[in-house]
Every structure is written in C-alpha cells, then in structure tokens.
Image (tube, rainbow, N blue to C red):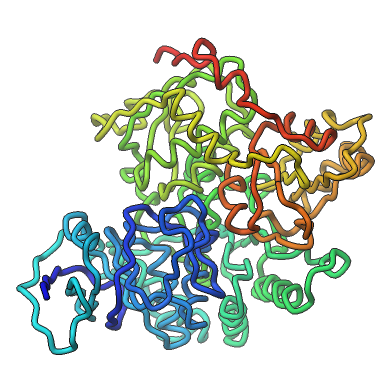
Length: 592
C-alpha cells in the first residue's frame, strides 16, 4: 500500500474518510447534483451519473449558480452528501453551504482546499483521509485508521484567517445585542470574511436574495429558523425567483407537498421584510443599483450583470450569505468590492457577429465562460456591435453558467472597459485567447444536442424576459397560430409583466396561446409545466440549454428568439446550424 500526505487549508471543521471521486472539471451543485439521490445530473460534466454520497469529492471548485450552497447543505442534512470535499482552490459558495450546516444545524462536512500541485495528486488516489487540520492522506487502497503517512507537503493556500476590525455596531450584533438572528448572521458573515481574507466589513445599500429557491426541507428549515429568531432585513431587499408561481401554483397542477413548501419559503423571506419581487433579473426593476454602489446580490446572472453592466460592486454571494448580509447590513470588504479585484486577467479576441442573430451572445457567453474558469476576461472585437441590454443579459447569464468568474468586460460595451488596457488595470494579461468559429460551433452543438426535430415545448425567459423581449416576441407571433403539439411557456417578473400588459404585448402573447408564468423561472420548473409526455424542449437561453437536460431529463434545441417563435408555430426545430455560424466570412474578427 502506497500512501502520501498533502497539507491543505481546512475551510470547515471535521474529519472524514472515503473513496476518492475525482474530476478536473468544476461542478455546479445547483443543476449539477440531485439533492435527493446525490447523483451528478449535469449531463455535460465528466462525472455525469456518478453518486457523490460517501465519497471524498475532489473537484477544482464550484461554478454556475449561487444556489450551490443550498444544494450542498441539503445533501449534508439528508444524508446524500459526500464524506468530504477536497478543492483545488477555496470556493466560497461550497464552503458556505457546509458552514451553515455546521453553525445552524450542527452537521459537519469537512471542506479543504489544497492548491494546484497537490490537487493533481488526487487524480490517481483511490482513498483519502481528510483531517480537521487540513491534512489529506492519500492511498491506492482504503487506509486503516492507524496507518502512517509520509510527511505532509505544504500546498500554497489562500484565504488564511486574519484579524478582523469590527465597529461597535458589529460587536453589538455579534454579542447578541440585536437579537439571535443578527447574531448568527454576523457569525456566518465573519466566517466567510476570514475565508476571503477580509480584515473589515463595509456597509451595503441593498440586497437581492437567492436563498428563497426551494431546494428541499433544509432550505425551508433555515429560513423558518431565522424567522423564529425574529429576523428583519436592515437594507432594501428584493427576492429572486422562487420555485413556484405563488399565486397560481395550485391551478397549474403543482404537487401540494412541493407547492406549499416552496410558497412558504418565499413567504418566510417576505416576513423578514423583503419585497415580493420574485425575479431572477433584479436589474430590470426600478430599484436597480447605480455604478459604484456596494450591494449584496446573489443569483449568478444577476451578480455578473450588476458588476459588469451596471458597474455596481458585489461579490458572487452564495445562498444564505445573502440574507445574513441583508440582516446585518455588512459585507466582507473583499472580492469585487475592491477596485483592484475587478480588473481582467484574460484578454479574449472574439469574432464580430456580422450577420448573426440574437443567439450569438448567449452562445458566446457560454463558450467564453468555459475558457475563463474563475478568471475575469476582457473581450475585444465587439467595439462596433452596439450590444443591447438584452444582448448583455443573455451573454452574462450563459457566462455565469459555465464559469465561476464574478464579472466580465467587453471593450466599448461595459462601463469599466473603454479600452482593453483600462479593463486590464494597465497590466499585461496573464493569457491571451482567441474565440474561433470552430469553438463556437462546438459550443452550439453542446447546447443544442437533440437529434429529434419535433419540439414539444418552447421555454423562454431564463433569466426573466425584459419588456423589450416581450415586445419582440409579441411582434414575431402576432397574427400567427401555434402548432397544436407544441406549448410555449414564458417566465417573467411581476413588474415586467405589468409593464408589458400596459404596452399591449401581454394581450398579443396570450392571444397566441403563450402561457405566462411569474415568480418562478425555468431552473425551478419541471412537470407538469414541462409536459409529462414532452421529449424535446427549445429555448433561446444558453443558461437553460445547459441545465435543462439534467433538471428535466429532456433533450434540448437552442436557437434565436425568432427561431423559437417559428418552432412554436411549426413544431419543428431548425435542422442545421444558422448560416451566420457556418460562414467564415461573416464571423471574421473585427480589428481592435
């Protein structure tokens, strides 16, 4: 038996042992792991179909949704979680799920980060013992408890504990002077601040809560416990999409056991003083923040949009940390709250979309996200493309799905990138990359993988539709008839629906037969909104095209809004790549 030991940084308490389940591809727990079984359901991931339960799960880091923390807590509490998590680098979303399980529910999952060189050694390990001090002992077979290991090697670590400078108000909350809810919230905020290497907290002006998504009984228990402790938010707070249309779920045929719990979760956050906005696109609300304002937003696409397009300052806050900061009004001074951390590290030359339709931007966002990993990019080549807010929304949502980066820059389109040098902070990029036609074609085939052309459901609004998107769809469908075997369902926020109604677009959409659903979004919807007999879904969302196969078990076609409208009328998806994606002449890179 051969053994070796590596020394990592313990992000949470506890020790554990088990067989190693390794991947060098980042994994989003939301949409990537089934809470009730522990199965990896991300059908694009190398571990697809594997069970994480009882394993020492070794992945570089998380990616995608901020709700990953909630799913991790869910599997910890229901017994379907891994024995331990070993990460290449500290991941705040995953660490937080384990921290909340420990502080609120007394359930411990060891989480350790070990650095790049040490992480690579887990690839061929069969077994791992994870110790509370961060040491990980590896073996090619199961280790007996008393087995000795070679001397541990120290890996480069991040996020070491630092001294915190607390105000008198911080100390009062921590001591319980403002109630149990704020006391526990401050404990969680400080645990995360130390993980991030922050030495102080800052005031924030608003919050957007993603933890209102129902991932199972644990998410509801957490919110109800805060309510029982008298929780009330300190700053204006909006709510993300919840898991049901709160006003219509019974009429939609949702199972009462699920519908009641999901609705109760949303109501618990309203009871804490949050606005019942229920939208995954809070940047479409009148309350959207201004450039330079410090905010705490969760929901991955919203975080990326706020940082990149609005120029507001927020980290990619995990579920549960969002409400803790809203309760205290205080956030760690770290990450994208610091101007120096907002600079790009990668320079990416991209093809100008000559002749392309609106599917170009979600496709590009998804592909660029895969290239970036955790690094912030600056994109060059789109200076003359006049990106709309809807284009940036679609790009950002897909980018946030495939990457873990909190923002992006596009030269000439986002406020902190008047040119590439400014976006890079005056430094040379760590790496320069070029997006190719072949790379975009491969990304398209990954998102649009169904060989079956007959489409049963056209799913639109992930993230929620804007007023302009409602108008564009209404114009595409006006005077036309739906295919009898194809349903069209659109999700949108309550506020946007009322604006679109005033514009006359809702009447046109309803006349066609579009099913309009508020409060929830496609990442939370399954049967019966997804018809039981449906086999194939079409969407214009890069985000949903990625998640839908794992979440619903259906095949997916991806395409433009016009292609989706055409499919709603004919029941048939396009049979080939769009012409703009097959013509090299139309996708040559523009000069920079």
